[in-house]
Image 1 (tube, each protein chain N blue to C red):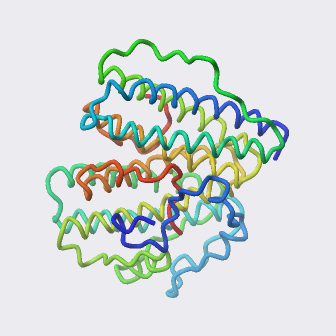
Image 2: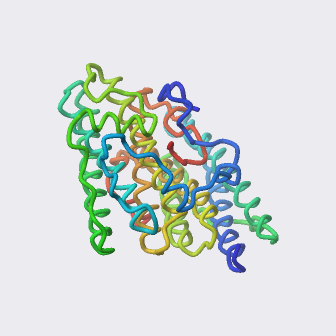
Image 3: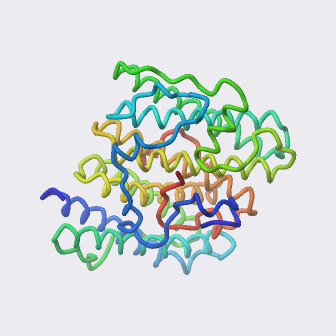
Length: 210
Length: 145
């Protein structure tokens, strides 16, 4: 729904038709467990039910987000302002990973290993309908579009998590992280669109993408 | 929905009404290039939030709260003072949403409310930026600034 931002309209769920319509689709545990995993078996042993399943899925997405940030930072295609913001956001993503890992350990669940190589991470992005390359990051635009798309996927993961988690504290933490991802999305979109607020905060409801 | 859900949603609706009052009153003091355009966009989004919350209250077979006769907005006289007020109110909204999300029984309603919360977080990032602060300084958005 934001072709100017992501050119990936089919995957975006930043909705304009109202909150009730927005949550019309099933977002329960069954939907979480039905999400396809990468064909190479990455995270194939992850739990699929309960809070551990929800948090595992969020962590797997955060692992992809971290890889995307690392690729962008090593590409060196962003200017000083963009690099500074992205470095800060990368630090946030690492903290999200730590938070989720701690929560999984508290539940006695296994922490999924991150994708073992770039090809595996690229397949992970494909599962979430992110068409951007992790290796062809020659321009600031390439970099920002990749990060905007992975931030959308992260927003979607936490949108689902808030609905599916059973523990109140974990619900709150999921929402707090979702708010942070939404702020990242806005700043990245601002960098891409000369801080045009119509592009950087385009919709009243933020649900991310699948 | 559980019996208490409508009351929770109505309390969030009151926060939205407060923000709508502040954006409406503050807009004339903001230059379009210095926060005015953003505030106009955000006012429209706050109105959409209010409509969505009203609909959720109706879904719970209850009556949506109406706006109060007046809201305490202080006396901002400059664009910057308006932005400071909006910063305060956006934080209050964030804290309110965060406190209420876990109390809502249906998962779908929780995520609907979280979608509004995340949009408020975006508003806060832009307002912070207009005030010369880092737009997204923390890994968790808590509304406790």
